[in-house]
Figure 1 (tube, one colour):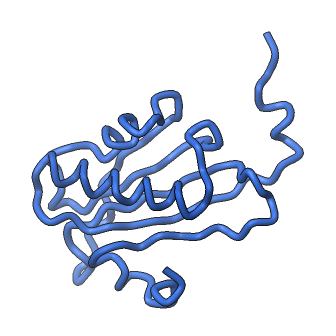
Figure 2 (tube, rainbow, N blue to C red):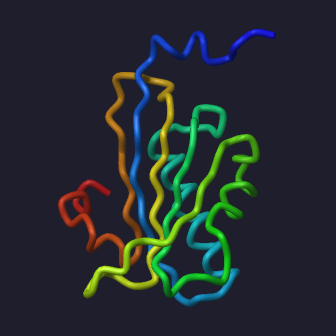
Figure 3 (cartoon, helix red, strand yellow):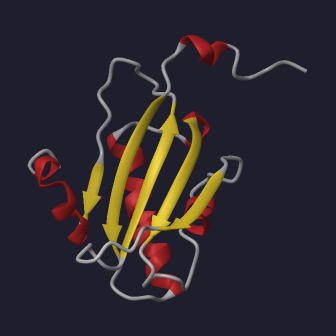
Length: 132
């Protein structure tokens, strides 16, 4: 059986960050927010699920009605290893926030990663707000 990663080893593995806030601790809201975030990350970075090595999702402890990974699976990430965890509850941190770290091989290795911060999460990276 051939190893599909052999051709990839010469390419550089990259990582993307993104975050979005949810409106409420409801399954449908967590899924909608995560889908919005993942679609935007995929579009801005010309990503396909087959380019992705893994995704790590975190959610603040006030979002426990659904796993964010469920939304990614519905977008075609069924074969991608996905992990969900609780964000560290630092006092004063942004509530109702879903974050993702994506490891991927870009279709264009020279293309700069375009991180995505949506809704209230844009406050987390004001330095990127003007670029979005």
